[in-house]
Structures are given as structure tokens and as C-alpha cells.
Amino acid sequence: MFEEASEVFDNMFKSSFPLTFIVFIPAVLILVSPLPAEASHEFTVYRMQQYDLQGQPYGTRNAILNTEARTVEAEVLSRRCVIMRLADFSYDKYQKALRQSAGAVVIILPRNMSAMPQDIVQFMELEPEMLATETIVPVYFAMEDDELLSIYTQTLTSSSSQGSLSAAEVLLHTATANGFQMVTSGAQSKAVSDWAITSLEGRLAGVGGEDLPTIVVVAHYDSFGVAPWLSYGADSNGSGVSMLLELARLFSKLYTYKRTHAAYNLLFFLSGGGKFNYQGTKRWLEDNLDHTDSSLLQDNVAFVLCLDTLGNGDSLHLHVSKPPKEGTPQYSLLKELEAVVASQYPEVKFSMVHKKINLADDMLAWEHERFGIRRLPAFTLSHLPSHRLAQRSSIMDVRSVSPSSRHGAGEPPAGPHVDVKKLSRNTKLVAEALARVVYNLTEKAAPGDLQIFTEQMQVQDEQLSAVVDWLTAQPRAAQLVDKDSTVVSTLEYHLGRYLKDVKRHYVKADKRDPEFVFYDQLKQTMNAYRVKPAIFDLLLAVCIAAYLGMVYLAIQNFGVLYSVVRRITQPKAKAH
Image (tube, rainbow, N blue to C red; front, top):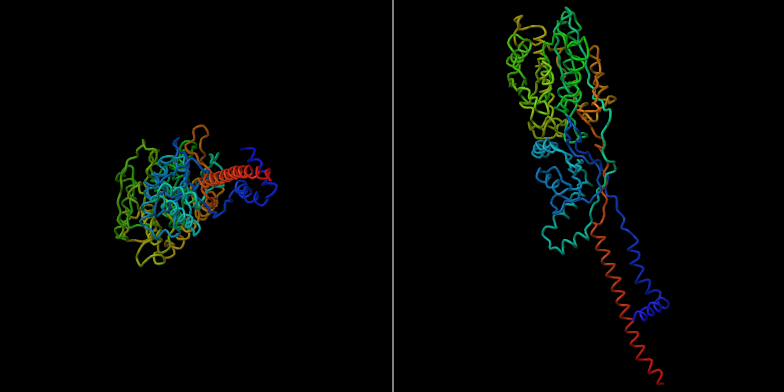
């Protein structure tokens, strides 16, 4: 029979070339011509934090992605890129993706954050939990656009429709539906070596002697959030930086004139690495207290005032590690703050919050604790009652426009934001209290409602607003601000306008036992390719094999039929 079939093939090849073309060429073309992947969309993604702090790893440990897209509604997420919108995000869904060993997670952020205040508040609360432990699953954030939203919608439709279908229908749907292959262009992340965190200091020297008391004003300038490239830190701590610069401007004017030149040294310090356990402050204290014989911090420090998150709210809290004793400069500042609030700003609720330093914690609560560990009297002023509030470390802490342009009358913008009027009020309040301490106005029986900073000496709202706008125009995560950054050089320029002896201080991690390690590949380009799913190739191969098998069987049967007919007709031909 095989010989007859071979004969049939030979005859068919010789006598019927069109038939051969129809039967075999389509199958061969399908096999050798792969389906092209159509580039559907290219967009920027921002990877979740990856860093080590005091030997403990945090964030995502992977930065490579090349896998098929799914939404969290799909039954199987293993080795898939899970796409979800912020409006649909929940910690349970996020954990589901991690438990099923998803290939990656992409969270789409809305273009207008103010349209979804509840989602913003919910996500802010979850950011610390997302960073609490490390994960090998790469986590990205992307800003919503029309193409990305279309990809999400199509993927959601494909993922959701499978739940109500039979197994055969799911197989057919999976094989025929279009999918998206998500591919990043970057390399695997690696540790950044020799990264320097920069801090800045400047001073106004007092008059009247050598051993003058020193007041230190501190604010950290870096920001923090679940994704470094999305961390703009408007309130935390753009507000503190802008207040420090305005205080430097105001007191530099006072110190220009002999009549108002006080007998206090004023030392201003902009610290880097504040969100990483105040690394810049730690090194600055070591340099001034351990590695030099002459420093203002070694002599007569009246107190250290740290400014943190002061751009909103009608409350002010003075956070202390140890309540100040009566008769000390710290106690004088506390009483002057209370007096200024009572006489000039009765709408403000002022209080002192006492929290002891817990050396067993990996992270310090506030920046003043760095000074407290070195036995320097210090406190932090903030409108937040607790260091645990999520808005201190959130990508949602962005600069918002005025309420009237986005919301109804009197409705505040969603999430953290900076209210310039309240920042200006708080700046004036602090300036008045500091001036009363510096010039000893209470002992001189000056009335509590006496205002020093008025007319030409008043706080400039435009200056505060301009500084906050500039600070929030770029992310200021510590991993992104190196010693050559425009953030550092611009801050140095502004300090130099008002202060003397402006200096830089650097801190690098120890190579043998680093306290902090940063990683690269925090911002990448992702491509979404429109492709058929992998099962489509399998099903196509099965169909081609079945098609060729049917052709083979048909040819075999044709050969048998041809042989029978030939045997029947041959004897008749011989008989004739």
C-alpha cells in the first residue's frame, strides 16, 4: 500500500502541480512565518524603592520584565504582568499577585489625583506596608494616558470574561484573543557605589562676645515615597525647607544693622538623607563633635529647632524627647510659642508632644532625636501630631493648585498639599517666637502681641510659594540628588544670599559595613506589544498537524481507491 501511495504522490507531483501547491504550501508558510509583535505603546515606568538600610533590604529586588499582561481578576497570575489602576488597588489584591509569583505589578496612577481623594488616602496608608519587606517581584508605577488605559481595558475584558466560561470556551477564548507582552528596556538593578549624600550649613554670627549661645535651625530637604522618581515631598519637607530659607532671609536683615544685631549665633542646616534615618545629620554631628576641636555645636547650644511638615493645618505640635526645664532656653522657646499663638494666632492649636527616644527601633521618629542622642537640646515643630502618619512619606505629597481651580468653593485638594497662606502664617509665628527669644523680649516686658516682622520685614508669601514650587518641580529622593544636582547647588545659592560661611558636608556609606545602599534602574521605558498568547502557537501547531494528517489520510485512501479501480479495469482491458 505504501508503494501505491508513493506512486500516487509521484503521479500527483508530476501531473498536478496546482494541487500540490494548494495542499502543502499554506502549511509550510504558516510554520515558517511567525506572527509579528505589534508595538502598541511605549511609556515610562517608575520602579518601587530598592535600598538597604542598616543591613535590612527593602522594596523590590528585580528590575527586568518580559511577560504577558493580566489584570488581578484573572484566575492565574503566575509569571504574568499584573496591571491595576489606583482606583482598583487594594493590599489584598497586591498580595494576591505576590503570592502567585506574578512576573511584575504595574500600578496605573490617575492624571488627576484630586478626583479620587478616598483612593489617595487609602493608598497613602498602604505605602509603608508595601515597603516593609522586600519582594523579588518588580513593582512599577505609570502615569495614566489614553493608550495605557486602552491596554488596561482590553486586558481587563479578557481576564474578567474567563470566569463565567466553560473550559473549552476559556481555551478557545484564550487562544483567539489578542494580548499584550510587557517588556522593559533596562538592565537588572545593581548597587550604586560611592554615592554621596550632601548637606549644607550657613551661619549668622552674633555680636557681644566669643562664648555666645547658638540656636540651630534644621530642615531635611530630601523626599520619600514608594517610588523615588515620584517622590516630590511638597509638605514633607518642602514646607520646612522654604520656612528655613525665609527665616534665614528675615534674620539676616536683622543682623545687618547694629541696633538689631543680637547676641546669639544662628546656625542653619539643610540636611540630606533625612528620610534614611537622618544620615546627613548623623555625619554632620560626628564631624562637629568628634572630628574637630572648634565648632559652634561644641560650645553653647541653646537649642536645636527642626522644621518638618509645616505647610498645612491649624495645629502645631512641638515634639520633644525630654520636656524642657524651666529657666532653660528650650523652655523659653516653648513659652514664647505659646504666647505668640495666644496673642496673635488664636485659631492655631498649639501643644507639646513628649516621646522618648527608643534606641531599639531601626528608624528614628523625628530629626531632633539625632541631636538628642548626642545630648543636645532639640525639638521638632510640625503640624502633624505623630511621626507615624503616612503623608510624611508618600508619593501623594505633591504640590496642589488653589482649591478654587480644582474643587468647589472651600473644598481642599485631595491628599497632602501646601497651603501657602498657612505656611506663611506658621513661618511668621516661628519667626516672632525666635525673635522674642533672641532679643529676650519677655524679660523686657514687651507685650505678647508685639509684631516684629511687619512692613518691609514681613514674611513674603511669594518667596515661600516660589521655593515650594521649585522644590516640587522635580523629585528629591536621596537616591536622585547627588553632589552635582541642581537641587543642591540652588539651595547652596539661596543660603549664600543670606548667610556666611556656607559649607557642604558629604556622607558616603562605609564599604565594609554600609549603613545604607542605593540601587539604580529606578526609571525605565516599558513597551506593550500586541501579541497572540502562547497557547495560540500551540493550538496553531495542533491544527497544522491535524490538517497535514487529514491530507495524508486522504491521499492514502485515494491511493487505495486508485489501486482497486486499476485492478478492476486491467482484466477487462486484457479480455478485449
